[in-house]
Image 1 (cartoon, rainbow, N blue to C red):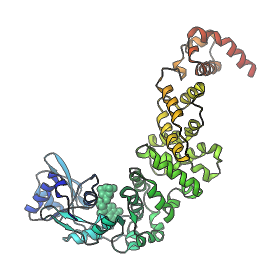
Image 2 (image 1 turned 120 degrees about the vertical axis):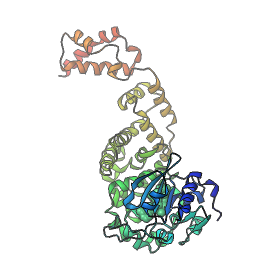
Image 3 (image 1 turned 90 degrees about the horizontal axis):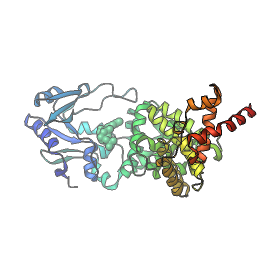
Image 4 (image 1 turned 90 degrees about the vertical axis):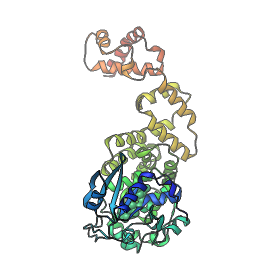
Length: 431
Ligand code: ATP
Ligand code: MG
């Protein structure tokens, strides 16, 4: 396989060359090598070097000791930062999470041996233009296979996160899991259970960037990872799980919001019927998002979308009053995540909610009054008309809004004031 040397940024090549001139060796390694060989966009450039951190520090004028205890230094070259990490060996892992200590090594092969998958264990030395591939990563790239470096069960036992990374790479790289590698997942679920919620969240978020994130969740479901991470999702009936995965892939939401599609029906695994799953699913999803340390804003957006998407799908686009009531209840500024989820779920269910979505968008963009604050009169005028304050003021405003949602032309001060006596009589009759 020809390595696309020209696509390595000049700054990365210059950093490697400078280390070489100082008497050390330097390679680019890991995800950047893999992605270059696959013709994918490269996220971050990781440089591995035989130089110890203090030697790296001496070889450059400006460095930031980013993670110097782990051997990582950020080198500044022409204003850009590059992460340079000293070659590390395979430490012992007693807690299934982190090596007990960091050991520096001289041989690139020792550094590659501690990495998780063969396609992540290829190094390229820009100065010699040589590829280092001791684990057959190039052949696996070619075959689009994700294979553990070394003995899978042993490697996964060192760090429980690796199996989740494996599931995630199946989706983001669109690879298949090599059979022996997958067979080792089930035996390390107890180690996986010790992984911190933050690291799990990061992998789920990375999976959301795939064209078809469902591929990661299929792996998680069949290997038992899902049952250990999000029990209701793991317990969904097969047809509902499939529907959720289809909604996930169809979703045009980005980042955490895409999870709304995956989680929208989890309430069905907790007793909620098809007619009323949205509320239960939203509550469960919010609890799960809290457990996995998603931000308050992410939790609110996802919960809101799940809670209201079914109302949108059930809306009759020809009913203008109902459409206005819907936008008023979800909020003029908060309808979009709801609409994105409804679109994804509609696609998965084989319906086309296009007309409803257009009707909702038109209302949200129109000047139609949708909130009490949009009414032509306010609390002061209502108090005047009632001859006093009290609990009824809010109730009258609500009733006025209901009239205006049904008939926007009614939003004139005189018309609203004229309606108050009748509203008052109604309210008093009901007390
Ligand atoms: P991406 O950045 O696209 O998510 P990546 O492969 O670059 O994928 P990083 O987390 O950036 O992943 O890690 C860089 C490299 O470090 C990996 O390619 C792999 O060689 C190694 N690595 C990362 N995490 C682990 C781990 N948990 N166990 C073993 N090796 C790992
Ligand atoms: Mg990376």
